[in-house]
Length: 256
Image 1 (cartoon, rainbow, N blue to C red):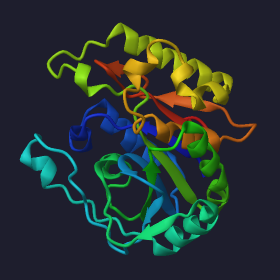
Image 2 (cartoon, rainbow, N blue to C red):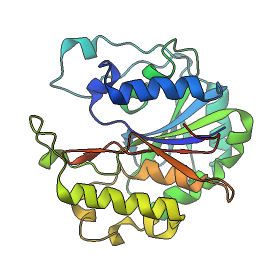
Image 3 (spheres, rainbow, N blue to C red):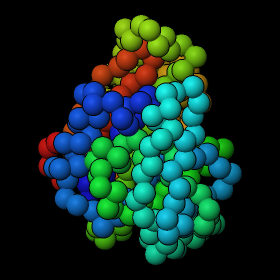
Image 4 (cartoon, helix red, strand yellow):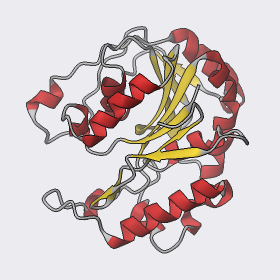
């Protein structure tokens, strides 16, 4: 199966038929149908590693200040406790544990509702231990590599640039530093320079603005870690709105 990193951006992208939502719809049609999805979302931060293990995970509305229509959304995709156990086995050395109560946050369902609107693909989420450095996330992602051959689509969901404090909702004009940082990261990805991306604080003066907190950037490292030597990343939705990058990457499985 291919591997994805998707810039999910504004939660309203889940229900607005905009260019991002339409591209996610097309992606769902273009990809081979996975047996299940393993999602690493910016919106499940933990100490230690956890996996959702509910048979029927709830739809979490982990945001505020949005229209009621967004809170009305339910994404009733089934869970996959067997996949959760499989992931826990692969990550046993790092003490991964199962959480039978955790639902799906909007980092997962806002994208998957467009890709798989029938909610017919089981979904498991792996939490982000944001107290650990980038090298930790890259390493544990490598341990998940067998899942690609088992029909599992691994999806990192975040944003390369994510600074809500500097985001102006009424002015989506991209900020110069955000454009520059997004371009720097894309150049490193295209060149296969993963070491510099793992140690993201060294990506230049824009890094502190682009990644004020690590949770939206770290899911990228899961996709990069699973890239094979003969695979080339393909970018889509590659644009910046204000201080948020929607740049997304597909690795493997041909061109989107």
